[in-house]
Length: 321
Image (tube, rainbow, N blue to C red; front, top):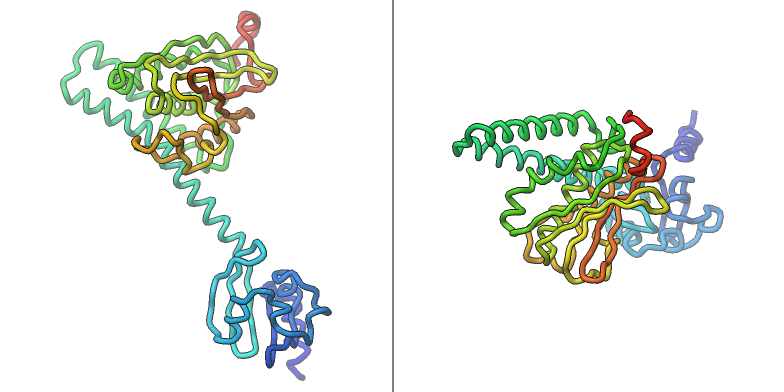
């Protein structure tokens, strides 16, 4: 039995693109090759090779042979040229998966860095001779950060939305955040003024992490000593904002992209992942993160949709879940 019909059937069904050519003329291309190259088979068969490839890099590869990865027509193509044969494989999904894995790895490292750094500072303080009540407070904070690390591990993979949601008062986060930020507040001679009377439904650890990142940004990049943390009712539900003095920014959306930093961040150490992580955490409870200019500063905030938030007047009639 001739192998010709079998080979033709195999090529027609192959996931790999197959193009046959001779003397710079297209002899055959299978459906996958036509799809990857964005052409119609009947219109390029028997025509010049470049008409089918429409890419001088692929044409050159056909002439000299070898392998290459080429970005073409919005795809990442692996191409291998043999005498009279061009093989094509779409690596776009693999590339996207690798980029997503790299981004997740960076986000994971950033998310773990904060509690680890805090635990190390607390351990150094205990080794330095903290006694009595201060030592007990440090141990309690160590326990809380260890618990948060455990929950972060349990919440993997990063693509999964945060769990452990409950209804809680935003005021619950105040003491823990101020204790954790005490060294940075002292270094900057700064303080936090709180007005957060609202109750929301979310993962408290996620809100804590998001608010911690916003406060750290305000301390690093703000010009004033006072930082305000304010919750208010808005049309969407409840917004929680961190406000600080400084030159109003002209652009905010770009800052929420991983690796992006503001024009005032040149002399401040950082990874550019903080606000990207804040946005991911806010999406986990169905909200969003944003930034907006103030008259003499900037505000970065979190939205809790109305279904996840309770106003102060309703707190007395609705018990926490």
